[in-house]
Image (cartoon, rainbow, N blue to C red; front, side, top):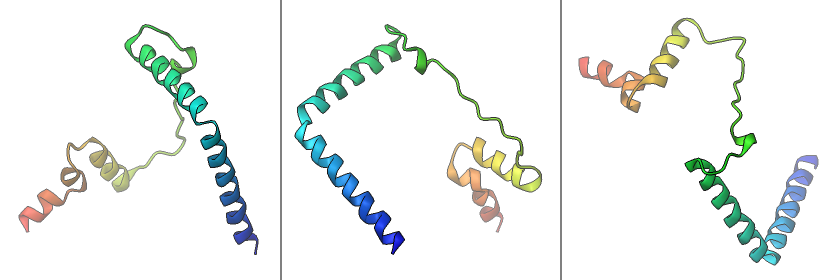
Length: 94
């Protein structure tokens, strides 16, 4: 009962938001266009937006180690998916 209630509430909220966006379509388009122009000016260096200049790093207290760490490192630095999963070299020998 509670699970269904959550989905009905979420559907109603999205429907209400969609109705609002359709009602104010012109305003939403103008705001979106202004944001795209501002982000473009920031990207080419004409305009500096301070909150976009921040750098966020998440400290990881536990890092993968051992075999899992090696596999994840290989997969993360590989040029292609085949190189990353090791199948191309293992399947060729086989």
